[in-house]
Amino acid sequence: MTLPIDDETQRYRIETPDCQMDIAVREQVRREGAWVSLLVPRQQRPSLPVEERRELQRQFIENLRTPKEQAFPFEDRPQTCFDAVGDFQIERSGIRFAFLTPLPGDLNRFVIERTDLDANRGRLYFTRGECV
Image (tube, rainbow, N blue to C red; front, side):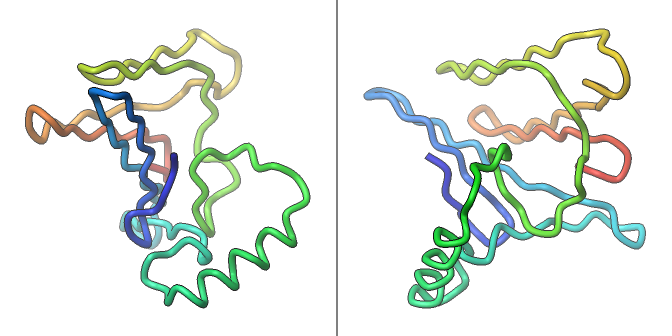
């Protein structure tokens, strides 16, 4: 299940009878020398009044013509930050990523920066150029 937890963060929740894992996803771009978080689509923003959100969601569904390939939508995003081909596995102890190498062009050309917060939380940054 994917739901925004604030105007800049999508949450992906995975649950089993004895385990729950939340993955918070933000997309940032570099603008005027500073990293700026992109906003979740207007119709999903928790800061909007419920009635306005419902109306925007109704309009969004009416205008929807084709499914989106993007798992975590954000507004005003660059066309492509990076292209990646790989897989991930979520287990009780954490998440594991596997990316194919070497691939032609810019496929799988990015950096993963890891920040340890504590035993139950961590932070990963996928960066390439002006995108994070």
